[in-house]
Length: 239
Image (cartoon, rainbow, N blue to C red):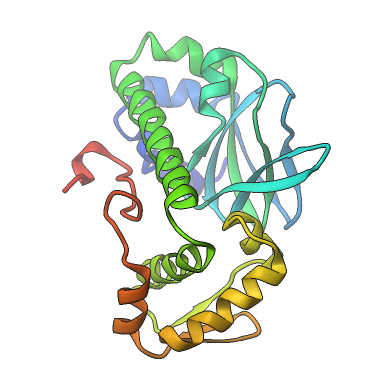
């Protein structure tokens, strides 16, 4: 494993507070892998053989049934996924697919379970990450239940702008149909929602979204800290 990868991994919240000896034991059988877009990393209803930590890129978590498929969550660098399945030694409840060129760390699941009981710092990080994932899930559910599709799109634009240091132009980093699925609407409804936001300070051309009036957009979106505030990556980050 490259030194720069090891340095980056040491700064991931899951590994930051563990003992050096534990970190070395985790890294020994683990590996960093690079994947192109549209690569399936795991499939739902398959065993969780590895814990995944994203170093770079975007990963779509999805699920499907006989009637269709839906996007559940889009994860970024420093996010962990399928931790619950790893801890329970159970099957994955979601499918994970890369949306962009992505690098991930893959840690054998059995090693995660074994080392939790030996390293208190690691156990605290695992508990915190499990709670963080649960709170993200509740916020996603609240957004779906309490907001219209247009409001969900408006708040997605606001959050993407904040993620990019308050930029007035937001680029959709993946296909629009993926964004539509993530927001719980059809591609046709997404187009209509963009048109509706035209009177609320937003214009769109291809994958570029321009915020022409931030105050009007914020007034319409009405963001709530109980839904839209990003979950801290560490306990110390909470404000």
